[in-house]
Length: 485
Image 1: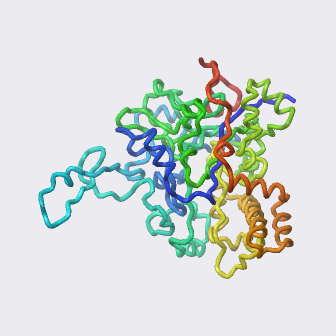
Image 2 (image 1 turned 120 degrees about the vertical axis):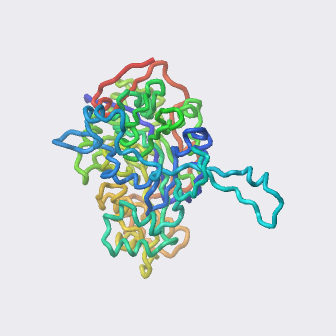
Image 3 (image 1 turned 60 degrees about the vertical axis):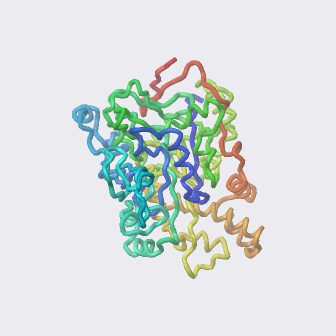
């Protein structure tokens, strides 16, 4: 079996468990971007959906030109080729504006301390953190928090274009009742567009675990990575003139600690583990038609229990500790085995390595919610399947429906065991439609509801090899490697 195997540290975010508390964002902010020039940087943020997200309308690639497109069977940066990038080197095109992000502000607290005695309460006026001038804040990283359906933010959600006008109106009419939270961080993609667009070659993937990093010594601040990233998770420091992004908390990982956002997560929605993949199959997946993107990406992942895969992985230089971590990976179970976790906007063709278990929304009024069959009906979900498909499956509704059926089957089986208002026949029918066995349904429930931190975050022991590899975009997928000390 002539197979090349690589290892990737990947994540799963379970959206049914996210409570939108923003603890992950605050922890990340305090740890990594609490300094001058990084006020607008939120390596981790939590968005309310429907909504425009942060930066505003980051999903609209007709506007931002992020990610890749397929032209004549080959992948091309939507931003333009190397010649186009060099031509505009000194004026990066399509950068998010201050209005897309927000002008960071603080408060003039000395007004409170120095206020003269008065019958009126003193006020700490908001001022720009950049210029110090008074501002009237009108946007922020979570400005529309918990207000799905608003005429300002949610109505402009690009994913709503997949819905009929009547569906859009029905969704907006449920303001404050039906919405879900979408935590976002760098996806540490297999095929990162930020790396492909960097003129300095400063962005690379670590060979041992696939974490995407920026070499600050090599970065020249050309800012091409900012528009090239379709998820808008690369930022430019206006103070230092360098690009920055999520580093996957690699200092914590190397010391044996989980990433800060994982450890602080109140809802325990975050899972991290190792995926083994075939780089050539991943390259084919990046070129696949929209309707086949999710299936092709799944097909690129390899079974860590397969003896032939294990042998090929050892020939590729993957240590046994990494193989053991892949065998115990919760991400492998959610993504490859159970197929309930989906990539965010796979049509951007960067092969993101953060996957999402889609939310099970309440059923519409009038539905008989006592049975699994009623819950599984795509037409009964308040959040339309087409909306979720636009986010997690490049419009392929069957992929999302299949994942929802499995989640409903698990919920139906548990309802029968705990509430008792669902018959065994209903449970058997839900499991049959979802293609699950009772044992697998119980395993999904166990890992969803009762996971310990050790079960949610499974990695090799801390520390690094003395010699590692750097991989850059599709060159890395095609097998071009650079050995670095």
